[in-house]
Amino acid sequence: MELALRVFLLVLLLDFPLFWFQRIPLEVACALGLLLPRLVRDVRFWAVVTLLTAWPLVWNWPFSDNHDYLRCFVALAVTSTLGAREPERALQVSARLLLAGTFGFATLWKLGLSPDFVDGTFFRVALLTDGRFADLAVLAGGASWETLDAFDAALRSFLTGDSADWPGAFVEPARLRTLALGLTVFTGAIEAAIAIAFLWPRFAAARNPLLILFGATTFAFATVRGFGWLLMTLGLMQCEREARLARAGYLVTLFAIEAYRHVPWSRMLVDALGLS
Image 1 (tube, helix red, strand yellow):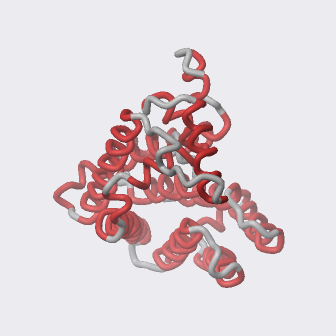
Image 2 (cartoon, one colour):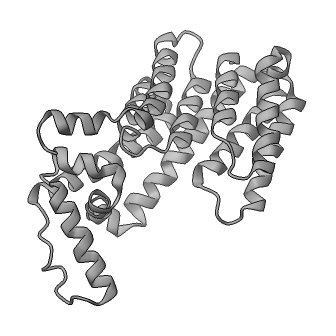
């Protein structure tokens, strides 16, 4: 439990709010929590941390990222469970419910309420417009840098009214559509599976492998480190005492998520395969 709480403090320290007057108080509190071991299990300390993660949501309304809310919910869960008769067990249950809820609502939004996700449109557009997915589009989607430039030029021409030849001005590679469909199926399937595993005890054995797989693959390209760190921290919080391998997996994945942001591994792979 203390390992998970210390990792959470480290995540809060490194993934801070935007404005300095929100960031500095939270950083000071987290630093104190890491330096003074007795604070880690002090419910009053965590109540302060919860307030410091909550008030930016009000100040920045409605522009906070979705993982900013999850960060506050995790802090609130820690505060609530430390006062329980069995705080470790209470924190495990809270973390599992937060994971089940996060992935359950993500699945509902993607597969139930977003037809443009289900039909593959989301990833077809993201692969062509989001720079984080450019290397993936070249590696597995049959695209080239000229393809991406051509789409960008055609889109700009259409939006500015310079050309009415849309979408005829751009030819989408067939492999890109197949890749988008594969990503759609994988994302929807693994998020639904994680929600079910953390909500239904019958599939408890699949919880840690699925969540670690999600973190290791999704954030290799979608480098939203704050969200990835929170998910891995929740994974740590819900681990049973004997799940040493799973805890190691969460820690390794947590640091891998940071490495993905700084090591241009996909671009090096593109260059090595001569696709640049």
